[in-house]
Length: 522
Image (cartoon, rainbow, N blue to C red; front, side, top):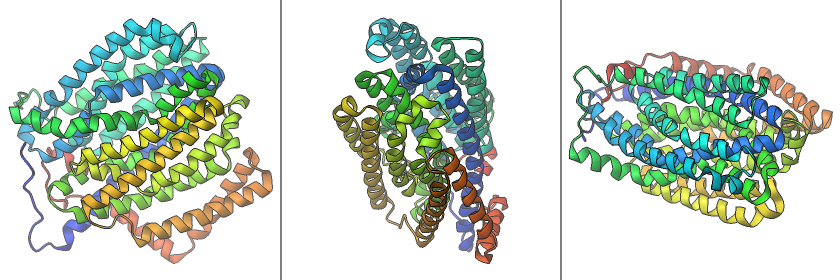
């Protein structure tokens, strides 16, 4: 594998640092816009599912999504992260050679899993789903796995070879917007769970076609690019990717393992409640997800070029952004869980305690930032695997003990303990790898201001209207007033103007990368 050999030009001491911050800021802003859109339509989808199918039906629906998600994460074998790591380090002429290496083994495994799952659906359904529609639901879910696996891998390639706008258009607009529309249509025409899950899966096929069209040109597929990999391409790629295979499955399946465990140990009704709570928890994480996909190729390039100080600086900058955007969401979820769950229907308010537990745990997750990306893009997938295994061990072991007696609340306690364990382990490993500070004064100040401001607004909301919808609206109104007041502070306005200038800045000054010309907006 040919590494990038470009280095900052001599005599331009401050310019590369400035360019890297400018590039990360611009990519991060685009990622955040996409994540916000995805979060909004993800919430709409959750409302459609819960209102359309009730607690038991939505539990089955979420369990089916869990099957697809966990199976896909297992079958990709870590190759999506391998592509994010490998493509930014390759030259244009030989970048396409990595595609067969990354796509063929996962696709073969996905086909095998799909065939086995369809054949075993009748025997598995009573244990996992337990309804008359269970076998058909499982069969449809397993049959879709090869399509979703290839889509996942092509999305990773798309993020590396096109400007982030292309990735955001597919991942954060096409998929999340199409799903509630199609599932809602299935509900309106009286379709059952099989029709609803099929409607949820159809946008994946559309996104796959879009990715194929977008990836081919920048990799020069069909225009002279070689697709025959060398022997060392296989060994180099899979030496990195295989340790990521297990951790990727754990990362993608954390919520869905909880849903499936809850469905098996406590019934579909409790699984539906836990799945609804989990949708809110994942929605709050979308800001960090948007930032992660925005800068992962940049982190890979910086660490590959031996500039960990800049990688750490980019990490601190975007962690501060993610903290300011995510912590208000989780603090409001912790205090007003009842109000949020009332939007799904009265049967879901039993998850209020579970919501508070998970929202507080996610403060840790978002507070340490995307330390997992630092490990993975630095080539330390083994350390990342160790962190995720520690979290999974805690989640599953506590889940087996707590879920039978406490249902959704027990599942939340188990998952929260796993979240804290994984993130504290990962941030410790990342510091030892990067050897530069991952926390600075700006992050601490942002955390203090965020907790103080949101805490005060939440307190006002509780006093005015309790923890229901009235109290939530009062808290949101208080936050709006607080933000308006902050805009009158000169230092705040200066910081906002500086960030806007950074986002709008030209990215031509970013040192050249191994990617094709279209990559300049990364």
